Length: 376
Image (tube, rainbow, N blue to C red; front, side, top):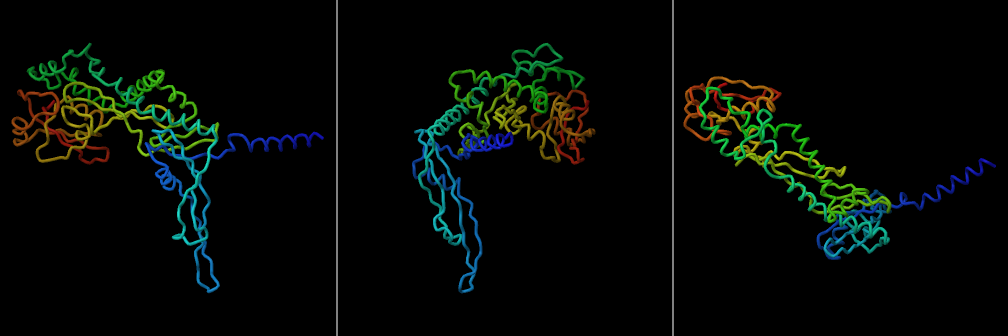
C-alpha cells in the first residue's frame, strides 16, 4: 500500500512538472531599432533558420536523390521605438526536396501576455543600460586622484607649472624630481594591475550607486533575473526563459584620468556576463606626453632611438619589460639627443651627464624597443 502511494505521488509530480515554467521552451528574439513587419520577418529568417537534415535515397531509375527536411523555429522581433512585438514561426517550404529547393518562410505565431510583459520589461532594461554606463563613466572621469605621489604629500595644483619647474631645475641626479612627475605616475598606473583593480572596484561601487536613481529602476530590477552580454541578454526564467539579441554591441564606455596636458589614461567600462563592471586600459587611446601607451610598449627600433626621460624609462624597466641593457651612446646618438626631437616625458637637460642607449627585451629575449636617455 505504501509503495502504491509513493508511485502515485511520483506520477503526480511528473504530471505537474509538465506545466511548470521550467517545462516551457526558451524563446529566442531580437531587438530592432525601428523595423517594419516585413523587415522583422527577414530578421527572423536571418537569425533563426531551422537546421536542415538531408538523406540520400535511390530512385526507381537507380539515380540517387537528396531529400531534405527541417523542423520549425519560433522567433520574435521587437521594435524598440514602437514597442511592437512580432512573433514568428520560421520554416522551410518544399519539404523533402533537395537542399536548393528548400526556401525559408515565416508565419505569424503567438506569445502569452505574460511573455510579452517580460519581453517589454527586458526592453526597458536594455534601453537604460547604455545611459547608465555613460553616467558611470562620466562621473568617474576627471583629474587623476593618483597624481599625488606617495613619497610627497601632494603635487602642485597647477601640474603644468610644476612640470615646468622640474624641467628647468639643474641637477646632477637624473632621477631628481621623479617622485612628483605626473608622466611617471600616469605610466605607472597604466601598467599597474593593482591600480586597475582599484578603479574597477570603485567603478562597481559607483555603478550600484547609479542604479539607485529612479530612472534606472527597470535596469536594476532586470539584474535579478537577466544576464547581459555584449550583444544581448538572457533570462526571464519564470516565463520559461528568453535569449534576446540585438544588432549593435552595447559597447565600451570610457572613463579618463587626466594627469597633465597630453598625459591622460583612458579606461573602457563594460558590463560583463555576471552583470558586473569590468575596467580595462585602452592602450591605444591612453597617452603619455602625446605618445600612446601602445606605442611606448612596442615602438619599432631604429638607428636613432627616441629620447625618453629617465623617470619613464625606469617605469618601463620595472613594470613591463623583462630585462634591459644600457650602454653609453655613440657620438651620433649623443648629437641626436642634444639637437633633435622632443623628449618623451619631462624635458630633462643633458647637463654634464653621459647619454645612454637602453635596449628593452621581452621574456623571450627579443628586442622590443630602444631609447636614449641620460645615464643614471
